[in-house]
Amino acid sequence: MSVPAAYICLVLTWSTTPLAVQWSADGVGFSFAVFSRMLVSIVLALAVLMLWRKPVPMHPRARALYLVSGVSLYLAMSLVYWGAGEVRSGLISVIFGLSPLLTSLIAAACRTEPPPGRIALSGVALAIGGLALIFLQGDEGQDGTAGLLALLLASVVHSASLIALKRIGGDNPPLATTFGTLLVALPMFALQWWIGDGTLPSAPPSRAIGAIAYLGVFGSLLSFTLYYYVIKHLAASQVALVTLMTPVLALLLGHWVNGEALDARIGIGSGLILFGLALHQWRTLGRLLPPRWRSLATDGGRR
Image (cartoon, rainbow, N blue to C red; front, side, top):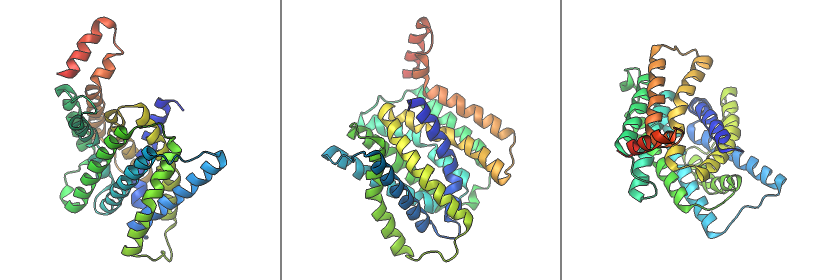
């Protein structure tokens, strides 16, 4: 699969995740929802690996990759699922929209990427402003502060793990990485469910079952595989920009599925997001310009 196609598919699958996460925990609890989601994913990943007769590398670098990915997946997903029960689904995308800024700062601190210039940072700030304009309704005080903090911490974990995975590097197959990650994370999710509740839901809602199945197939197996494929070919800050695109699509999905109102706020917010993305990636976009303008664009992105 081409990198642009994988990137687009990743955006589309992540756009559906916030609403599906909330639906999956409805009536069954967040610990059972996330555990069952990962269980579905690892069973399918194993089946595909066996069908295609693909080995799972177990050399030291691969084991380090699985460990970092698995632990960060457990921490981030647990925080997201818990926080999703305390806040509106739109705020999940808003908080995770901070990932590009966090990733750029962490990558610069670790010296894995050049420090972002003022134009790039201005673009991130502008895009975050667009996200806030779209999603924040002025009654955020009704949402739990603890839930917002949990989502913020999940975003930090996600950004830090992205940098760590880039530093580990290697040529591990994406599907094998997905399986190894789930193999590390699943026991932790199982222990969390067993300690927190440990009982099977007697009559889970059909919507929750459908959401769990969807997340297990598309939200985990497919998106994780695409995610590990994309981070092998793009800079960490470019991968993190996915979280700036998904909120708009997630809002449109909420409108179509839940009948949520759409207004001029969306048009203005979307424009801010797109302009912010252009500023953040100004140096990359500058390479598409004619040669006589290219140096100006590239130099401007460093300022």
